[in-house]
Amino acid sequence: MTTDAPHAGDKAEPGPVSRSRACYDAAPFLSLKHTTYFSVYDQLFSRFIGKSPVIVEVGVLNGGSLFMWREFFGPDARIIGVDLNPDATWLGDEGFEIHIGDQSDPSFWEGFFRQVGDVDILLDDGGHTYPQQIVTAASALDHIRNDGLLVVEDTHTSYMTEFGGPSDNSFVSWALNLVHGVNHRFFAFVEDHDPELRVWSVQFFESIVAFHVDRPLATVVSHSTMNNGEGRDAKDFRYHSENTMTDNELRIYFKH
Ligand SMILES: C[S@@+](CC[C@H](N)C(=O)[O-])C[C@H]1O[C@@H](n2cnc3c(N)ncnc32)[C@H](O)[C@@H]1O
Image 1 (tube, rainbow, N blue to C red):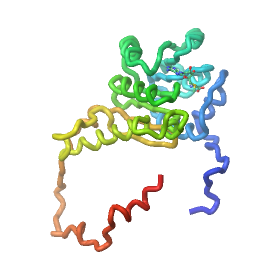
Image 2 (image 1 turned 90 degrees about the horizontal axis):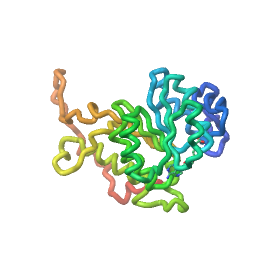
Image 3 (image 1 turned 180 degrees about the horizontal axis):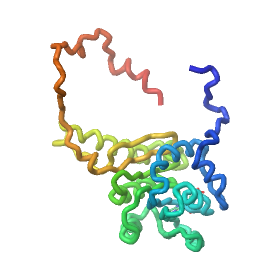
Image 4 (image 1 turned 135 degrees about the vertical axis):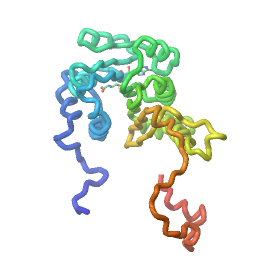
């Protein structure tokens, strides 16, 4: 443990090794991203570099992030921008595919995926309201390729009063509901619940939620197994501890 670890409020920036930050800084047009996002991009997206991924970013604005993704993933990446603002079409001349439509409209997404096909990554940096984030995520999940990612940015809006938060209908509430579906794949629950069979895992970062889509992994049937090792007749002391806590006592660990 070091004594000079950064504290909340310090102006720490990702280190110079961040590839996504370097691509962002080099983009010829404006992009707006938070300092905390670059390490997440590097961690989640690096495995797609040079593999000609199909990536969709919802929210184009000045176009800088599309240039950033081209630099990041390589010239063979198929980079698609979605925006409600028809002015975004100028980026078509720069080699990007631009689709104009409303991300909170499920029928827009139906037509979009019919035309575009399935994609490796969909990154939502659009309007950031709950309906926009939820409809986009719910519409996209069936169209993310196996081993692909659905990544939703600016999920702090789930806690902001100007976005209607906090609410049981916020995007983070929707994501947690999906986590219940992931856990309901456990064999003891499947009879009574609707298990999530597309998303293998969900990662929560500050202001970003990432859904790792992998249908083969998500449909592995859960049951207990035993290896061939020697048993030593050890007793399970699970219920022998005297340090039991009431639900009320446990509440002190729920901070947020
Ligand atoms: C945060 S900006 C995008 C920033 C951009 N990705 C960047 O890195 O600079 C949000 C964009 O989402 C678009 N937008 C807002 N509501 C939308 C909607 N309902 N459907 C599609 N795009 C929307 C806005 O027009 C705006 O260009």
